[in-house]
Image 1 (cartoon, rainbow, N blue to C red):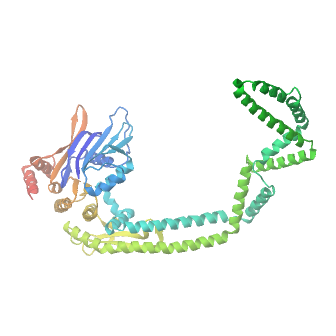
Image 2: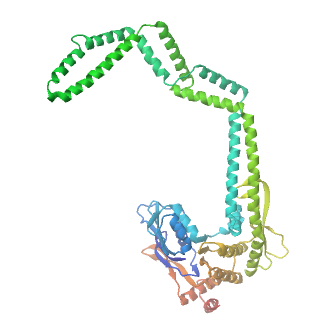
Length: 545
């Protein structure tokens, strides 16, 4: 249950502290007093995204904090999210001046999705006009799956649907890649032959450029080598001079380290000398070879320019890519047939999964029909009829291979039609309450919040709805925002949202009413601002029923 709610600097609620009790709590107040703001703050606390937030850098941050009494059945959620489990769990959300927020559970920072998951574990909020969900197919499927406990079967079906969708996408990709015209195929084959005939080799262009540079500068390179060998190898050359220095240093132990370093230098010079000799041996002017290298380099540069590439490696990759396209086109029919066989096989698996799901859903329909009709009779609709109809279709969607219709009639002899077409506002409210009564018994949440679920009803019907809310509150904490005295009188406790002027500013507060204040508030709900003795008498009578 929710034990307390503290709201600071959120719209009209500047510093509101609300204590809740178990059972049935009603919240009343004039239109515009701030009832919906209170509910919106609670929704924000439980993960609702910040929308239409008025950014004002001069405004103080908003803080919404609540204490919940958590039963141990929810402990796994805390373990899964690395949170400390406390039977009195404190949840806090802070929203700064520009609408950015932080959230905490038992003083541990949490992400918004964790906060949302926590909210779904413990509370269900039925906001104003949510009866429209009875007209929404997605919401109807969710409701039936909740009542049928077919979430596992739905997940299995959706997993097979995912496989089926992937196969269909793969087939589409094959058709797209393989659907080449004859001219396109001939052009690809020409490109492949051109690249393949070129015998492309990685790093070849750089090697060719080095060879060409060498051949174009034979004389200069030869002179440089000859001069280098002269300075290295003659009687007064580097080798001789360094050998003399090394011999002199070896006469003294002091120079042992320097002598070793000279050994390294001599070894390196020997390598240089050998490499110069090797280059010199290979060096000879060869105009034919130079021409061959230049022609080869021109071919590579032309291919790079033609295909808008910078490196030979990119041309090699392009060749492989073209080859794959040609192969795919060649084996197109074979691949299409094979993929169609996979799809046909998966369709059978998908149909079987859909059948299991449909069976589980259909099994619960008679019970839903019976229970709803019984509850509607208790809500003053003795001739109400309700049915859920599934119609199988030859397509697969996220919710199965059927459409769903909620059919309803309120009057004796009336033909069942879709709820959206025949139910009035008051009938929708009663139908929604009856559904909530059933789901409350199955739901794992412990707190239900109704925001004017009684729209469109009054008098005796409102009293019957109040009785049903009271029954729900025996198992679940129930908080209901209502303008109806018949419902307010059924509650175990009564909160009132009041609006007043403080220092030229309008603020709202939430106050708990005592017995006498409840009488006065219910009298106002009965007769409006002008209170009469009859209204007070009626209020007391309602509270004593």
